[in-house]
Length: 251
Image (cartoon, rainbow, N blue to C red):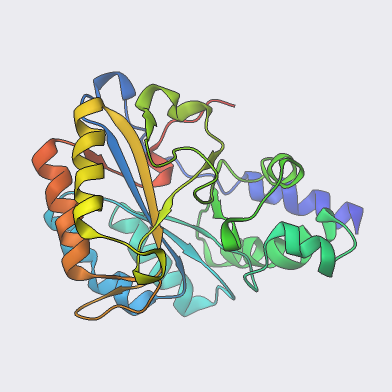
C-alpha cells in the first residue's frame, strides 16, 4: 500500500497544468472566483457561451468516475479556459474519511487516487481539488498538498465575507467561498453589493455552487439570470473573473 501510494503521488505531480497566471500587480479592481461541484455537465456546458460573453472563467470540480465521455467534457471546459479539478470519487471528505478508512493515506488511495489514475489515462490535467462538504484539516491539507496546487473549501476559510487583498492570494493553499443557492439564503442584491464593494477595494472573493439552471434552480444551484448578473456586475466594475489555475501560488 505504501509503495503504491507513493507512486500515485509521483504520478499526480506530473498532472499540473501550465495555465498562465494572473499578474496581481496589474489588478486594480479585485478578483472573483466562481466554482461549481459534482457532475452537472449539462448545465455547465450550456453556460459556456455566457462565460465567454463576459470573458470570464470558472472552476468545475468533478465527483465520481472519469470515463472517456466525462474526460471529453472536462477537456471541453479546459479548452474554453476554465479550471477543472477533482471532488473525490464518492464525495467523501477527509474528516469523514477517517471514520471510514484507517488513515489519510488509505483515504487518498480510495477516494482520490482512482480519479487521478483515470485523469492520467484520459489525458486530463488536474491540479486542484474541492473538499466535499468543505471539510478539511491541517493534516489533509499537508498530505494532499503534495499532489494538488490548491483546494476549495467554505466560509470558515479565507476569503471570508469581507474578502481579502488580492496580494494575499499566492499564500492561500485553501480558498474559501460563500454558497450560492436558496439553501444558502442567497440574496442577489447582497451578492451584487459584495462584488461592487470588493472591486472598489481591490479584494478577492469567491463563491461555490453546483449546477447552473435556466429558470428555476434547485436549492444548492444558481440560475442563468443570477450568473449573468454576477458576470455583468464584475465586468462593469473592471473585476477579473478567473479559474483557480489562473491564480498565482507561492508554496
